[in-house]
Length: 422
Picture 1 (cartoon, rainbow, N blue to C red):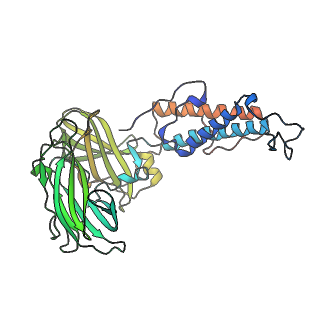
Picture 2 (tube, helix red, strand yellow):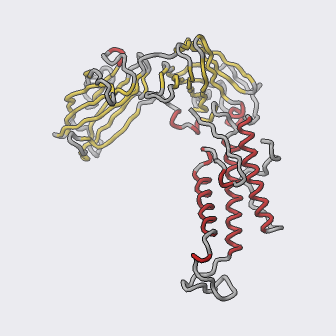
Picture 3 (tube, rainbow, N blue to C red):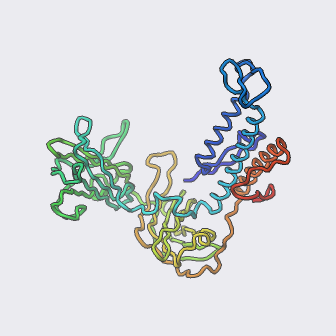
């Protein structure tokens, strides 16, 4: 769940709170500027004795033989860096906040583009007793990490050498168990069938890849809520190894989808309304992916709000300016929707809704009629922009007063609007 921050109101710019999205460049510049400022505040008694001689360039300073720092040049450098930092802060926030949080370009969430793709890894074989066997690599895959009630997860493993050639592998055990802590009673251990027979999670028989399926609802773990760990023991190249697969399982559905989807162009944006039957009230977090007509991933639409019990609509929006900026081929396709009820201050922190895999809805909207290119506006955004514009304006005024008549560094995003306006 995104966290909102309110900028601190203070006289000194150094104490203002920067938003998370400013990036490493702004933070690095801030640290450098503060460090430079700290250096100039060292008492004179702690520094080298003042040099003799009138000059700066080419003149020898104190006993160390280094040039005497030009205090005016150093002060100007600090003022210029402050101007650049406040300009970067203002421009970065203005650019990053032109779309609302619930409708973002897919490039901002690259890890969420295809949430239902298997998770694949390749690591050195872990041997029993500790350590690894570097000559043998284990290829693993896991279909998903979070499981709603009634869902199943597929695992696979295959041993190879450094050249990618299959190393014969024999599975010796495979058990799944709910993870418990402290005084909690251990859960039941469930044996899994892991095979290379071309069935279930193993698509090809006899290829050296072994697969297994865990469906908690069909086992003694049906009522367990939390992390279920599957441990698979095997032998390969004459050594005993093991691999672990973890999933987070929800045995209760807090809400379910009714299958109804409607769309509307409202306030300059395209909205998808998905109807859900809510059984447990609370804050729901829902995400969907939006592709254009050519299949190009385009946007991530999200919902984060409180729902009461009963039949409710969950709105996933594609912001108008995002559509005008990116110019996707219409119609748009909503796909791969997942959601959960947030549970704060407990572990696990969510109750999962059933996932909607693949295409959920293809829009009937085929033109840009009614779609607006206006930037997103809110009280929060206006407040941040006003604060950052004030900081930028003050920094530029200090530099202008230090060197009257000298041109100021150009801005990365043009002139700021009048204070108090976005």
